[in-house]
Image (tube, rainbow, N blue to C red; front, side, top):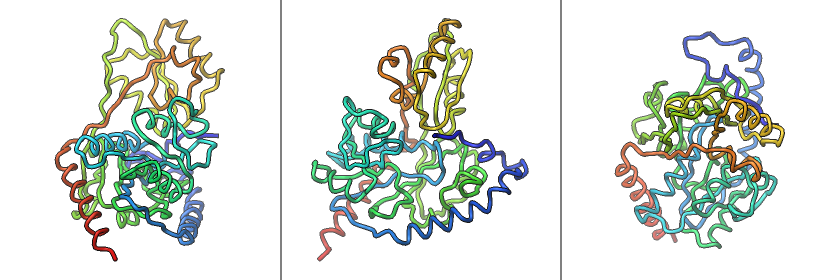
Length: 339
């Protein structure tokens, strides 16, 4: 069952360490040891086409999925890839893969909410075995693979690894799971990072923690919605940090009468929706949620729910395009020189 993100993970730096964090610290040591043992036994395989990985080191929302969508769009728009395929583990889905996701026939319970959303605009393969997923992508005609997550998974060699960090939440309290949100220490992650994507204002001083040789590409997530000033809204979301969605709604000028936070990847039941719809009817309000949450709602209920479309916008798209162009040229030239 999905769990809500603990508040102490993202406590302010000026607040003291909580008793819960202290109590969980030994479990963080165990987690870290297990992570290293597990990864040491994994063999790395190579794909025949470029592999760009987009990942993070925090558990929960960092803007990774919007970054993947925006990178795919940029690659296509600049003719850097004609057939980019997204490769995802399919978190939350029952199918182990490899499977080519069909947006119209698959359900989120089979392939996961993020792959289903991404499949609306392009080809997506889900596979718990990443190398097998890469082979299937090649078989279907992919000329490039965009890995959605997999930053900590060494089974498939990455040619370029992007580390996505949210500027407002940063690295949280800086502790490893479960005492904090980190999947691994920052210094270890930076050893495998080719470029960083910083989303939003750098409120946590992240740029100061990234070595000068690693380029940082700024970005922001923009909502695309014109609110109706005459309507009331009830927002809800099951994300790593649902309060960010609430703030976005408020920043858009929506008149929120209520907001409900669910656990990340929460599978909405008919009971959940009935309660929300009943309250909306009583308050004469419109229910609004994220695009990712919307795919986790029963099809018979979706027409009664409004979504907030968002898009990630690059601060300097030309600079990122040049970086990708040079990286892909280097990959091609190395492959040509290989015996």
